[in-house]
Length: 117
Image (cartoon, rainbow, N blue to C red; front, side, top):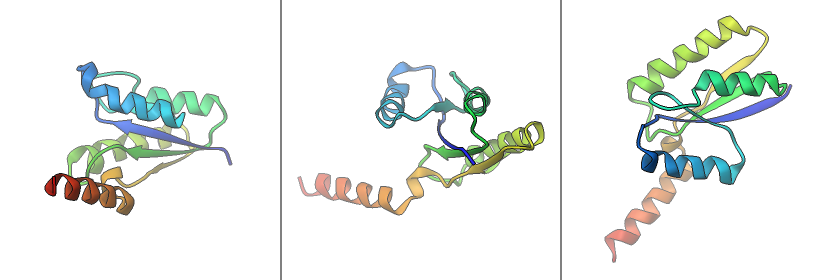
C-alpha cells in the first residue's frame, strides 16, 4: 500500500494568508490543497497523488479544531465522493491539526512566553 499525506487548508484569495501554509508544505515536501477560494483543490491533489501510485490517501486538516462545518461536514463529504469514484483507494481524514496534543503544547509554550514578557 502506497500512502500519501495531503495537507488541507481552508483557502483564501489573499496571498498573505496562503503564505504560511505554502511554506509549511514546501518545508515538509508535502502536497497542499485548499478547501475553497483558491487552488489546488483537494480533488486535484488527490488525483495527482493517485496518479503517482497512492492507494491510501490521508488528509490532514490544517484547522484549529473540528467543531466547524468544514471539518465535520465538508471534508467528510469530499472523501465520501472520492470513495464512490475511486473504490480501490482508501481515504482517511485525520483530526484537525490544532487538536493534536503536541500542537497544543506548542501553543501553551508560546502563550506562556508572551504572557511573561
